[in-house]
Image 1: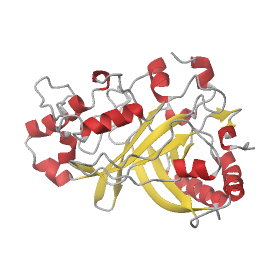
Image 2 (image 1 turned 135 degrees about the horizontal axis):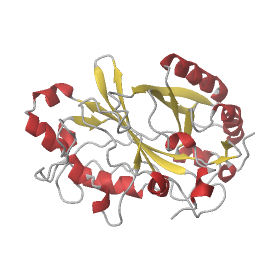
Image 3 (image 1 turned 90 degrees about the vertical axis):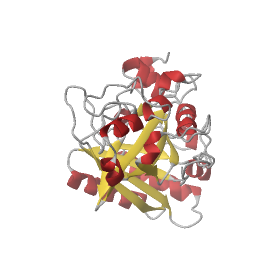
Image 4 (image 1 turned 90 degrees about the horizontal axis):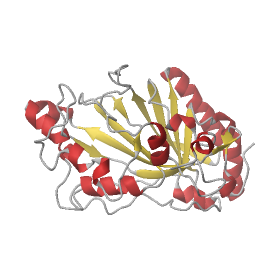
Length: 313
């Protein structure tokens, strides 16, 4: 088990906190094909005071870590081989921010401040606005736009710390987290057209009361992703939120882990690579992005970027 006290003092706390009322998923890319490492470091140094790890969680993509001359064990790009039976796109990213709060207008201003701090080395590439839907104060969970409860099987307490954060690898690494980010687009018309039992069997839970169904088919999402059914067990800390833009809507799937191993084990099984059975969730939704990021730990309340060869103020 991790040293809980040490881990708590170093991780970005927004990862462990529940999902906020509203959030923005903000992706930045390099301005031009190449940027001098020093220009990238200067940009991150300017942005660092805006990243407290709670209101703003920050992740760096593998190509950015490489451009900075850093090395993070276990960090690599989103695999391109998931999509043999279903489409699971890989869309590598360079700098990702999860901007969290309860006022979408304020999150716009935080995004603008980040954008100005990171310029001219980075440019804003993509923003998705997320929100908490039908939040149940009793369980602490929100709902997917299909109405199903999201995050029911999330680990809690020390188990969440064990699943989500690096430990035992030394300074500058302990307290870090690896995050998988996918934007899924729902076909809500197709979902609405399904009989109730078919809806339940796609997920493996009863929509009416969230009870897991013993007679659900092998393709049911709950059966495909049962975290304790893998060897070794594949626990991740999910922090997903619904999103919508005009008439499109879906789920921003976000899973934090001490490595990418657990997510990849689940994604392989969902995509049917283990046994040829694809997850029922693909009948009502499809991923359109897929990227990996490394969320550095904190040191004295600031981003700990020692593994990238410099210190943020």
